[in-house]
Image (cartoon, rainbow, N blue to C red; front, side):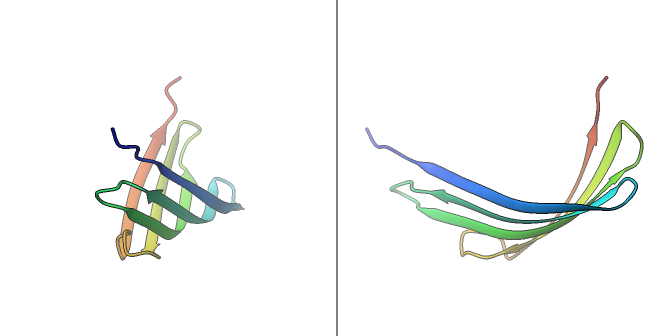
Length: 84
């Protein structure tokens, strides 16, 4: 039996820039000590979030890879809906 440990962490700062709009910056690292395929995914990310309505938020994020195991760049779009 083989043991595989994966661990990581995120440090981030966010700031409201107007009513319903916020900016965030994060540094993330995830390391996987798999004996067959060790990897380190480290990224720098910046994002903007817009609270469209009290129930709906829209997000846009841009990432830059800091380690060989991370993509060079990534653009992400997301939304959150409060089911209530």
